[in-house]
Image (cartoon, rainbow, N blue to C red; front, side, top):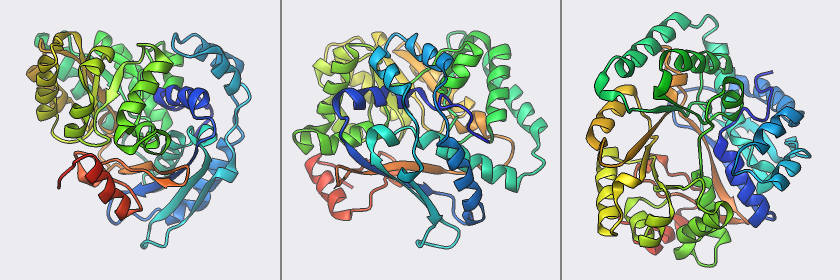
Length: 391
């Protein structure tokens, strides 16, 4: 059994789920899976994936897990009470060989948002672990340990990086649960104060680390169908977030409609209200420069705000970004695949994205076009027009 705890997921799943419970409990959604690696055949593993999903749907939150969540300052007691009754249901998820092409599989998650939101991260972790334990039966863990040691040395042994902090964001594309656990234990021991925490709630609880995360793309995408007007969906999403958390968890995601549209909506009010923003597509150097300039234009000191970088980071890229922006803003770095799936094998580039909410298409228009995922070309064109997005 790969997933043994419903806490084995990213924190932002719980923070978004709480918003759904309190503000959108009737929303109906659909998610779809995609593997971006050409030539990878996942069809031999469909039955094993299904078996793992059956086991996932038997899990319930244990009392000590609920107590841990209840101890987080931004988690409300009625939400924890709801989680005490919660269980994932197999009727909302279907796995089949896909018709789109040889080797592809289709994973469709469809049902109430409140009852499907926790599928994404464990499902991706299951697909990864099933694939790698079947294709790499004798994994080269020593190579992974050597690579990890070299990365740690880059940061720990350079006095110019004394203030650099790195977090683990690697649950969804990890080589295995056991490997992520070993990576985090090594980081805690060897990286020391440079380890900011982890997005994985289970490992945060078991290793005494800080759980990290705010919102993901699906939240702002769903607001396209849930808000009063499409053009106002981004500001509606930010306002509902602020209504729920009252200044806590104040990192805004900037790339659902691209940076131009984000900056148009992220006015002086939001600049002051939110603690910072997260980069997840496009050129990170350009993004940081534009965001700092935007803060200055709105008479906000960027040194009081946090720039979170989380797009396909490696340790050398983290160091370059730190050197570029250190002293100009507060900085945070979330490293995913490069931490939890760097053993010398090609990682799977797999995602699960929301494609519909309340029967309406939803999408993101990323600064990295290959990250876009929508099954309705007409809606994508309309979204571009509404948000004045060219290209």
